[in-house]
Length: 362
Image 1 (cartoon, rainbow, N blue to C red):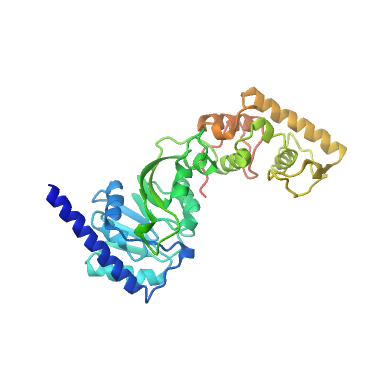
Image 2: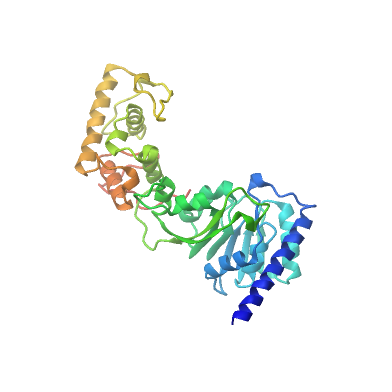
């Protein structure tokens, strides 16, 4: 058993150096662009681990984003029924087709030459990909909030990005990214990957995470939720009472209610001016906000409404960075029931329904 394991490691090392030398030779004809996040994962042991952790069935269709020259693609084709690869670089696609054809696997590979963020994903069972760092956030959002149903996504991401994605309430790295993604999906840590396993070598290490869509998703309009969390997490470690006392935020939120066309509150809030100068905390200076006397009255009334909402739910002294999804959903529900919304395109409900019935696609 030990001898077999030794030979497997030795064979993988020989394969690793062989593939690396071949790729380095091909680089005389293809220039890898770090600006596009073109870092090829070379180590077969890491590639095999990613495929194994993905739990791919022989009947599965796997979607791969940014396959590059096909190091991961070839491993996926060994176990999946079909691989759909989305790659925008035609030079990479040429090498990919060549390598797949050499293995006689071309009938099980479909390559889409388009921008992954701009094209509609085809139907797939799993996503397995080495994600270019520059598109990590929008691609994860497109996966978890998109129209496709899928079983899981195994993604190789920048280590710091993965840590933020994995963060939980109360942890220092808990952030709006984790709040939005974990509303609809569970995120599992798989393993860390050293930067030395890539060609060319990036400046930072990477991590593999696995994303599982939740069986039950809260009934909330995503655009409304996204705008709400953006407001709350502007200063995530301040209390909600302090966040919602800031004049500029109140004015913008108050004006938004009018632009939504609420027939029961048709007051115009256009008689004000906000200077965009920011103070050292990144918030607009209170002294730079000028109002007419009528707007001051409306603003004070609106502030009282906000304070009443926060107090009624016991949120005034709580900090966004420590709130669970259930607490954030409760707070958003309190705002919506008071006819206060955070996104201009959210439609007012005819009944007292707390939230809209479904997520909007990104």
